[in-house]
Length: 543
Image (cartoon, rainbow, N blue to C red; front, side, top):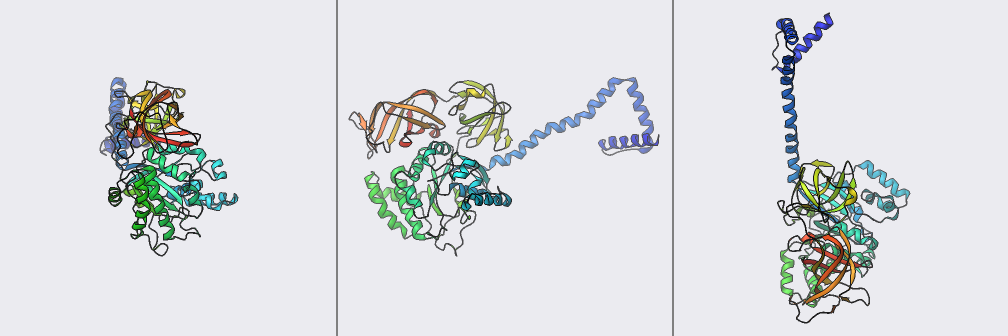
């Protein structure tokens, strides 16, 4: 009996806490008797009383989603940038990416020690940092990145997604896939004597990667001179300046319109750069005075020296005792300072699909190029016109209610099966769907045709446009553009050679989703490749 009374008293105290903590111990027992009597007389009142007690708890639950949204808002205010690491094989892209993750706290010391031991067991002591990005066993054994690695890190102002593109020429299509998702590029070149020359000469991937990056919409470029601590270099200013002069030629002549090559190391270097640039620029039809003005005024390309293996000049500036001539920023500062063109969160929704899989429904992956998506939205999967509903949205591993342009997303959909979606399809708004075509008009720049090949009607190649890879054929050459005056030539064109600019009609076998370059640059620029070589770059000017 004493135990029962104590239980009753504890129950009364708990109910009293719900009633602002007021309790009258003397009236406890009579109230208990009255309550039991009333419950026996009217069971409906018991149900109503339980419902009344439950109401505050339900209200508390209704408030929770609002609190979650408020917590998510700060994440949305920090800008997001996709950074693709490109360059010739063995330049140190994966090692640099791994070092960034370590310095930003994404990888702990114990993991690094494990990778060091694993690399030592394979007699590859200097590869351990690359193991952070190269998770595939085949990549670790060969020391070559095959698939585009993906990782994330943050600074005080920006969330970054690292896209580690393969450097070997056999995997250029994978590099194109990575660069097509990027906002800015980090071109990694090796300062070690012999390695740079191999990548820079014809057939090396340094030139091709720069061309492809610009064509795929990477408007801002950091040229990172890696391995500056190597015994053959030892932070030599002369070696660094050597790269600056060579890349001035590449960026202006081959790519066109990367606007600046600033160097914080040595102002007297300017005259040497100018003497190398002017002959190439005149041959290409540039007004030299205007271009030199651009070099002074704009900020599209930046050179900086680093050591990716030991992390020098990456998170903090290099010490003057190590490199007394460098007065510029470190890598993290340079990345934070980059400004990219604003995106339109209110535009029509466009998300090219790069991958799909099953996970409690159909899940698609891609980068939002325009517009905003929310849970519950109805969208179209083009070109099949399948109407779907957005069930869930994920940024990295976090589930969010909505996402804007520039974000890499995983979206769970209902209303479509995974086997009905292919890479290259586009998730599009219902009101303004993306056009699906089998033929379009394009303006092409012919880079370098294969030996004994001519570019004419009937020429076949592989088209790469956003995440689409499709065989295509040139069905008509419409007109050739004068490279100096930028005006069409009156003479009818039957074929063109390397360096020519031509307007032509392109045909593909299957419907593809594209936009005019003037409307959506990221969905309207493309490359043509054949037999493992990039032969032309272009933009869509008519559908």
